[in-house]
Length: 146
Image 1: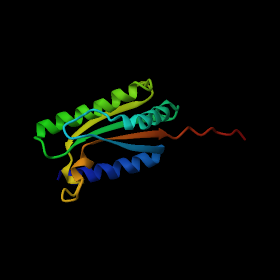
Image 2: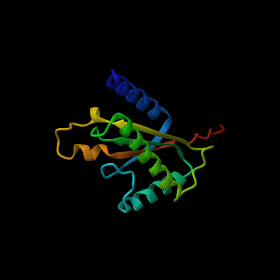
Image 3: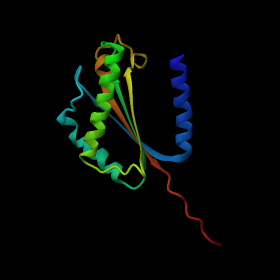
Image 4: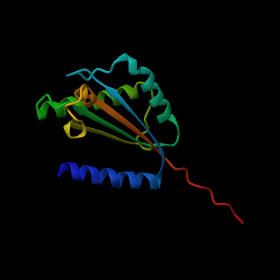
């Protein structure tokens, strides 16, 4: 049931987004097991995200934390939330986010086992991540006077 709702929401969100958003930029930051420390190799990515956020057309920032299913449900919620907040706080060290102009959604999804085939090598590593989605609003078109 949860998977059907999630798929329905994604389809609705994508159709809504295409009607109102000009473009989007998505990136992912991966974490070590049981960690929410961001590796220094992601510094250039965080700076790139900050530059994109600084543009006047960024309207929504979605930061979604995940954990692998090896921990308890409570721990997975905890670590995925810590990961999402770590990414947001890192972004704040590179850019001031005007929340009056930009909506920020920080979510934690705990373990996300329904999204990955756990029999694949490295599947758990893929789940220990944070997805960052930036959405850019279409500028209002100016009317031309006849």
